[in-house]
Length: 266
Image (cartoon, rainbow, N blue to C red):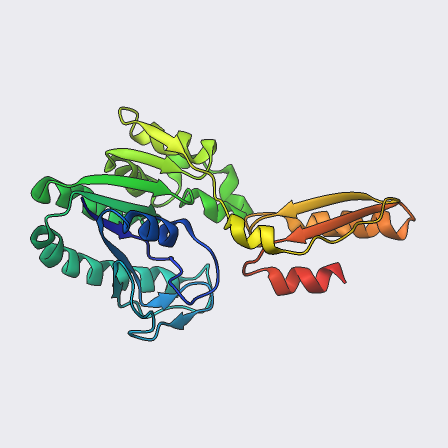
């Protein structure tokens, strides 16, 4: 098969952070023709990618120009993504039809790319699989708590999100909650939950740390961002620790809040 993977926030070979889209490209390339389409802008460190950095690979990489942004929740990010979409749509109109694509596997968000692919599949004849990584625009409530009190249908862009979900021929999501949200807009298609994983070989190579037996240990493993209230968790454990209670919290992960949380933990 000829498979195109569209993942604007994907990490590429030689870059930090493990992600399912690169893993999928590497795996599918063993038996299929694969093209991985992503942004020229690296979301995780806010830098432009260097061209031809990746060396010889068993699949093709296409980087679509995006001007970038410095703050995740900002109007400049909205504008940057809009530029990515315009450039992606221009590339896709010319390329996907000529490539005789069988399947497009597309990350959600972005909203516009999936709506566009839903229209384009009718012309080009490919099947569209949408992988729901985050339920935008609802996820903005993590940064703007007042949004939590607004019904979903009244949140800006919610109707656009429904169109993006409805474009899919098959739905994949990182949690049951996300899959349920997507299927509300597209109840007739099948779906599957594939939780975010990790590179087992890297984990197995880590030297275990012996923990003390006289403490009760708690662990958080995951993304360090505004979507998760790790600050309150740290504050609570600091209070218990100062009070002489033998509880210890271990935080394992990365993300935009890493440095702030490190300082808060003391």
